[in-house]
Length: 293
Ligand code: GUN
Image (cartoon, rainbow, N blue to C red; front, side, top):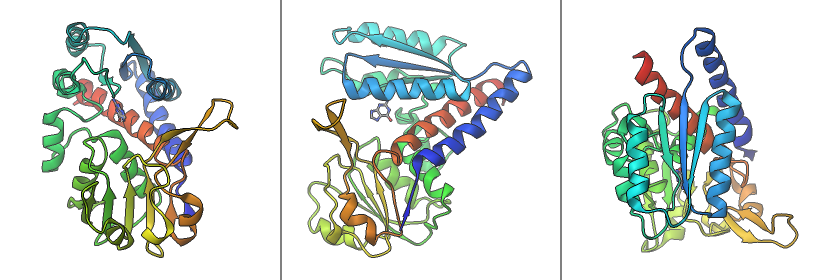
């Protein structure tokens, strides 16, 4: 069993981006600029956005964090996005989800200029991804592809089972792994809350991706001997023994599942850091397309 070390793989990606950014600076070119928009005071969202801003600093990107109060009007938020769309100094825009109830995430996503849609959530971006056209790939699925690539894991002809059908992870992952690409060329099964015999599907997976947000959901008897297991779960669970008061738990019961796997991602330190590295790559791409192609 080998651990898929997302910290290490993401560092390698960031190191390589850092060199490319340094080269841009040396040649007097503008460096990528990511704007992150955060609404309200959701603790997890604040942590994720802070990690994204920190990664920008690490690789030498410019970054701006715009933090609105929970009660901000939809109108004000959309106006800000329109400003960012037309600001030539801004390459990538991300609005951290979830948003408060009174704001439509769909409307917000639809307002982001697709050329700056580094989260890959705009319908036009999703359409291109489905068709296999060059575009931004949503950060979590992209990070998983980069991790599989980093560890040279063969995906061709494998049965990939994805648990979870969210627009952010499960659905794009199913499209990408079934695409004629490398990584890709998998036979894909997507499981969700209405799937009958979910355990049997899971146990038939060569590559099992758990993205449902239920801590410890995947147990030892749901995993085939030698499977590759990717855990996308990052649920905060109250834990008095931690200074923060909580621990982060994955969707896989790691201790019992790991011995059966050929490869497995830990939580934390698996998919999470890869998501950030993927976002950095998308931001670099947004800047490259705009300025140099
Ligand atoms: N919330 C959970 N995952 C994501 C993500 O990848 N991007 C944004 N913007 N919000 C999220």
